Length: 170
Picture 1 (cartoon, one colour):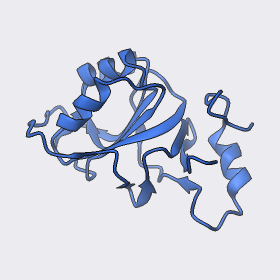
Picture 2 (tube, one colour):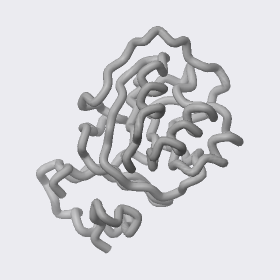
Picture 3 (cartoon, one colour):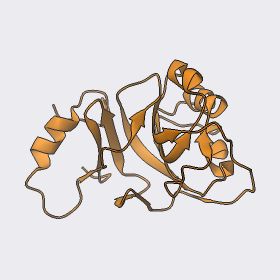
Picture 4 (cartoon, one colour):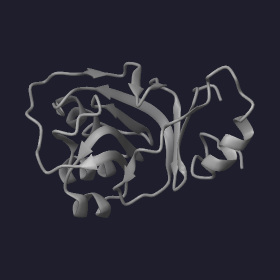
């Protein structure tokens, strides 16, 4: 199955890995299998927008409250397991505003609410403690998620088997 921006839901991460297993240039990337699924949408794909922050979700909130246009928000939270960067309210905003997925290199909260939102949500773990908003972070910059570079405009594909990232031109 060849994924296309016109039909991003017609894909299999296993098939994508099979197609790219001989690639040696590093353009095709597989995220490590450390993320858990929390959202109501199990498979999702779209162009990437990024937020880089640490225990402050001000920029995450601003992102999901803006039009998503079928994009995937990749949040580099520094893999912190001390504060939740996304909860039920932000997940509902993401779904309402047209984001197809949110990938958090960090924690989320409100598991029951997240599972009811029509948006894919992947994160490292759950923690009930919210962040403090200090308006610190960066938007649409290259981030490293579990050692894998993810850039704004890349395409991220997620399904039950995992997550892969391809360049925008793929």
